[in-house]
Each structure stands twice: as C-alpha cells, then as structure tokens.
Length: 457
Image (tube, rainbow, N blue to C red; front, top):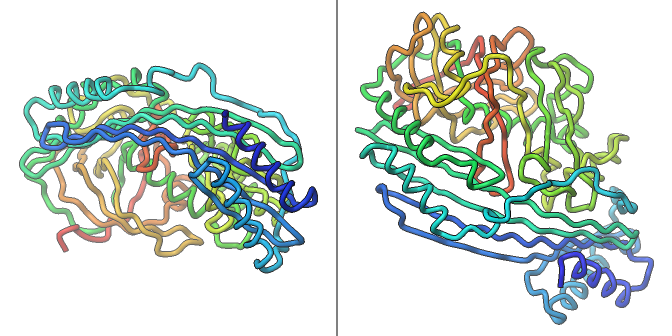
C-alpha cells in the first residue's frame, strides 16, 4: 500500500477507536539510504537500510500525545493508536496546541527526480570512490559516498492529504600526507552530478599544500572561509538564530526588519531545491523562505506552534523535534556573489575561495570548522576549531600552511554591516552528517575573525 493510503488508514483507526472529535495527524516516511565507506584508500563497507516509519500525533480533550512505529501491519498500527490515545488521556493540558492544517495544496514539488540515484547499486558508488582514490595520486584517502531516497505522505482528520519524494547523493572524502589532511565534499540531486575525480584531486592538492605548518599568535585575522566553513555558520545560524521557538522566547539574535547583516548577505531556505520533501510533518506545504534579504533579517523558521505564539504563519519547518528544540531551516543557501570562481584550483584554495584570496593583504584561508559549540546563544558566540587546512595569505598569495587554531566568534557579528569584504561564487551544496540536511554556501571574505589560541594548547 502507498504511504498516503497507509496514513489515511491510521486516521480511520483513530476515528474508529475514539470518535470523530479527535484531531489526528499521521505522517508516513519511507527512507532508503545506501552508504559506501572507504578508508586506507579501499572500500571497507557497503551498507543499505530501508525503513518505513509511521508517526501519529493526536489532540484529545485538550491534551496532546504522539507516538511512532516501524511495525506497519494491522497489529502494529492498532497498537500505535491504542498507546497514543492512552498517553493523551494521561497527558497534561496542552494550551499551545495550534490545531490542524486545513486542506492545502502543495506550493512546490521536486521535479525530474533521478531514479538511477534513487536505487543506485554499490557499483555506481564504488566507481565514484575509485575515481576519488585514483585522483589523489597515491595519498591515503578515506570518506564515504551515499545515496538517499525519501518517500513520504501526510494525512490528518481535517482533510489534508499530501505526498512527495526526494533524492539526494553526497560524497565526502579526505586525502592525507604526512599528517596534513585535505577535504573535499559535495551534495547533489544526482550521483551523476558528483565528480569523484575532481573531489579527489582537490583533497590531495590541499593535503600537499598543508605540510610544515607554522604557528601564529592568537588575534583577529582577516579570513577567507571556504564553503565547508561557511556551511557550519549556516548550520548554527539555523539552529540557534532563525529558529521560531528561540525567536518567540527572546533567545535569538533575529530582529525582523533590522539591518543585522552586511548588504552582501542574502540567505534563503529552499527545501524542495535542497533535497527536502515538499511538506513538513504537520502537513504544511513548503516553499522557499527568504530569511535575510540584502542584509535585512526578513523571517525565521516556524512550525504551527511557534507561528501561533508569535502571530505568524507556519513556514513549513515542523519536524519530529521542533516542539522541543524549535523549527529549523535545514536547506539554507547563502546566495553567491559576483566573485565567481571556475573549476578546481591546483592549490589549497578551491572553487569560490580562489578569487577571494587575491583581495587579502594579510590573513588566513580556512577550509573547515569542527566541534563548534555555543557559548552565548543570544549573540551566537561560537567556539570551535579549524581543520582540514589553514593557510597564511600575504599580499594576495598563499604563503604557508598554518597549524589548526581555536576561535571564539559571534557569527552574526562576523557577518554584520561592513564586515563582509566579498562573497564568492558559486554556492556549493555541502552534505551534512544527516541525510536530507543540506547547506549551500559560497566562500566568504570577512574583515575579522577572532582566533583565540592554537589547537595544541
């Protein structure tokens, strides 16, 4: 039976068990992910998993409860309904219940899904891995190549019924030489759009350029951030800033209508363009949402709960965790600027970072951030480490590798008016550790970044 038929069946089971007055939401999500891992320049694991999950949320006599199951036969669905009804009767009153989405057509849907990638066999992923390893020219390599198919449907007791599919492919790999790592990664709508050889060559070039790093003193440095580092900025801005729950509770930096960013900054969330489904788990249709336009904060992500709390409408960002953690924009794109790169650089700067280096008198080229943690949420002060390559730039030229450093930096402050020297191009889709999450970023030339110590001490 189709996902939509299955969702409708659960709605009817609730109606039969508790009557027509129960407000019921049912989401059915089938996720098929296949992953090829490699290490020591050889494939060591192929795994594939396909799971269908049914999520039920209902509101009964002013009380709300939710449950889920992967057992989708009659007994499994009946048990889900029974225990969720029992949980609702024992739950405290839910004054924040926002009601159900009325019947609403989808506003956007992915078209031309790549069916080859949706059912890609291990040989297709292995070919990408082989190309990556060969292009690294004998350097030690490791990483993964994955393909994911998401097929989902939603139905509720108010009559909303929608369904959709999404496909994503991704590759993430490193090359290593004498302790220096170079990284290259890419997400795409099709496995055919990923060039394993180009990624392997890029990672190897960065590793070769990373030898004999020097140590620099802490301080504020002009920086060029490559797309992977910018993707971390987008991730934290989404999680703690453009989060409707955080905004409603005064915990976010976001001020709608204020010029909080440099005019060069425009950020949009594009679920159906970024490998997401065309509706959220509350059945709200999804479309593009402009979060920042020409530096002005224009919106935050809302589910129905945070939207009701702030007098807004849902932007289609409900998730299984959104009532607890808040709704998040997981397909954000920082719009590329006029400084367009082309092809793969032979040196450490790649893609949209290469043309930005020439504009730096003295600063740093940074590949990637990791282990980033929030120190202060309201101003979004983040601490973290660099990794996978840092280089000193002098008079527009990369002159030497630099040892990894710790930073402590407010992300909104780094993007504030007057702080963005240039935005590179194109924007590059970066795969997240979770399939279905994608941040698309160009390189950025920023006036100041606060490096607070060396990673060694």
